[in-house]
Image (cartoon, rainbow, N blue to C red):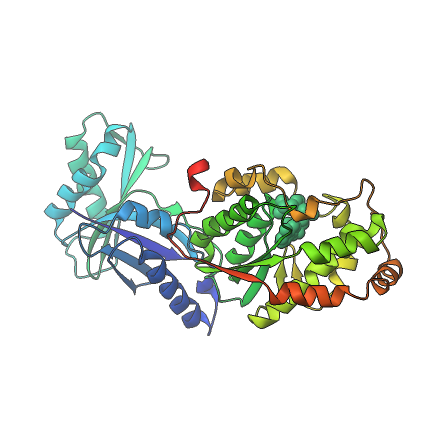
Length: 401
Ligand code: ATP
Ligand code: MG
């Protein structure tokens, strides 16, 4: 029996003239993500994308998991393919769906005949195949309105396909069809979720992380690298830029009012992110900020942060509760890594009572008293370390989870 994957496009079918660009990007992404899984034939016909293993080493189960993480697909299913011959269809349906049917009490068959040369019409196929399966599984009853499962048969151009109910795909738009942005990736729960959400809207992403050794450890960096690696299944391969941030951070600590420390530091990070973004043609910055979650995420503080540089700052979590964010983190598989107990540079030197309503006047006055900050930021940007995150590689801390 030949098993394949069928994937169905989502929102992009609504794109008028641009649709071709979206489709070809999706196909390219699909081919690239499957390279590490095995040898697959990938092609499109009648708005469906077919993914067929070319040999016995191409693992359909793993491929299905990978395709399920590619943005742009509304739904997908695994299916058995056979000749367009009714007897072959019956045998295939029994072989492929028999075990599942044994665990059900009710079922129905839904047939669709796209190839009108096939001699039987759809209702006839449904009826006859239903009768065949009932003979094989006498405990079953047909229930048209609310069956336990549905056996689908599709007679298409290149063969007959038998499958169970489709499952929802990753949704969204193919990565890179909306441009490119830089995610500010901490080791926390929020920023990986923010990255996932923006990749879902078609952004191609690179990540930037600020490390402050010796206050932050090598393992904290590996944790962020692990998160980026986990995200690569969704974002595709990308770079993680690790900025050595100790000197600017100490300089702010030593030269600015305590209560403004966090906002000043976040502005400084934004300026450095802006420099890196420009060098790698990113048109926006993504953060995991959520309104009022902490002192640096009040409206006033966010305004001060935004005014540090001129790229749009995308904050997909802005209106979400922590519980909602955690739910997504679990779903996408980053949660367990995010809760590993390593320090982040944002949480060192933080004052006990940061100002929740900073004003631009006091921020600018404080920055004027730090004449060497711009140069320290430039040095940090110049010394950035680039780590390549490839699809299919294991996260460095995988063994510890
Ligand atoms: P997270 O759970 O993602 O760490 P958080 O709730 O802890 O977020 P903050 O520490 O205030 O919030 O950080 C807010 C956002 O700033 C993060 O979501 C992330 O986008 C960015 N950020 C924080 N620390 C760093 C860092 N060390 N490097 C890069 N970006 C960071
Ligand atoms: Mg954090």
